[in-house]
Image 1 (cartoon, rainbow, N blue to C red):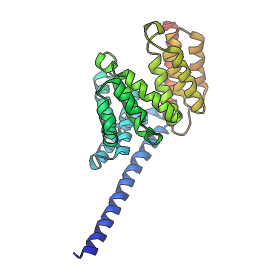
Image 2 (image 1 turned 90 degrees about the vertical axis):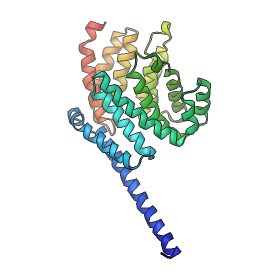
Image 3 (image 1 turned 135 degrees about the vertical axis):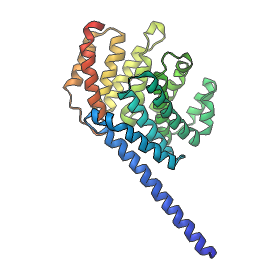
Length: 281
């Protein structure tokens, strides 16, 4: 083939690859959005395994695509959180979610990847070098990491990683506090209300993060109030706050772009928490 013709072929092939890559990413993102806007959790629960396998196949065909990896990670994490009660299975799904997110992070930020296993100061230094355009990658990894630790709450090796997760979420708040409906604030709210103040918890800081997340979500992210009640109100034994937050969730319209599934699940959880309030308090 003449040199000019060979060069033209390379350009055409590169264009086809780029189009395929774009279509693949678009499908994964559209799939994720369709799930998030579903108002019937049972449909998602029953259909999600097929969705997960489809995303696995897309990643298999484009294993270095960071956006695909983060999408796959978030789908696995969300499914494990919302629908899997068996501990061992939840851990396996969280393992895959973290593995996908870590591959994306290590490909894009090898220095930070190396710092994950190192001392806190080295990790904090790597975080300080991140910029606003790193937010989607950092948030995807941080969410998967937090979920992985949550699934191993009895493992002290896993729990020892919490300070790094807190630092990562704090950096996300500094870079873009409203990203993903103020998700970093929500994670910090939960992390700071795991223990009472006299045992090292930071419940009042956690309360501030819950309230900030609610405002930044446009007062549409109902799971914020459920977690606020579950973690803060129960931790400090504030029954009036607990019941008020949960009743507000039950009275709210769950339909909101990108939040419908989460809000529908929040209403279910709010009902369960209210039913068990008498026994808890």
